[in-house]
Length: 312
Image (cartoon, rainbow, N blue to C red; front, side):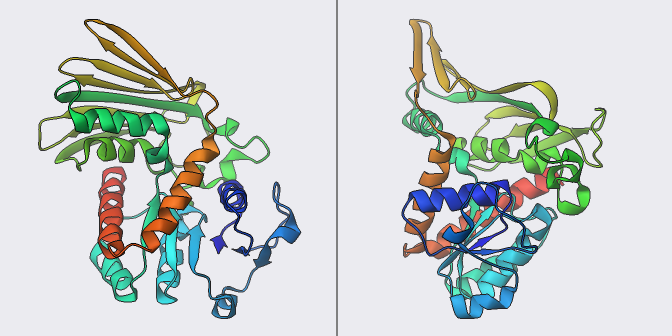
């Protein structure tokens, strides 16, 4: 079951269909036309009580951020495994009761940070874990794009990213970068500071820029910068080791490893963004079958909880 059929909801439908799933049920609050998915290829419904007869095995939640938590809770009550688009919620909540409820029903709750499934990010994680260049010392990430360019077919001012009541704001909307540095390091920050930028001329009632300074127990420090007021896109990840500097340019899909002995360039030609979603979906279904799914649920929700606190 897919909850919500906006652009990300349709992407998930397309990914599921590409993986051979055809028994797809789409819950919508309004029965609007689908943009990229054949209407007769899925079952759309607006009465949530229909899930009692559908009895879905799993749900992917793609509603606006402010509706994520209620969707998760509704699925837990029905014993449905959940992959919820980031972030889990837009507000600080008590996370332990949610973990307990999921474990009582023995269902998996996974948060959709698909950047973990980028091949070059996975290669970078292997480099960090193997100590190939000795210690990781620090990092700096930068992600800037222009919100009105995201979905040219709609008024950006009405999008969830632009509205506080829908859980918007650049920090939560682009929180992939907070998650990815935590995942790469394999730890959650011991200390952090953040500042928001409201200076742009975008017509939004949320922050359009955010900067985070992070420190980990092992001594690693880093900076994460986010904005959606930048008209010239840039998305880069720089990691400094004892013996190397690694630069990953997301838009060029290229990782450059610089050492005193030379430069190595790693490119992932032919990469498609949907491949991250495919791998995430496959991992999700594998996790639903894992005997460790209660532990995985606790891990995913704890990681997400820290990010929400950092952004609030």
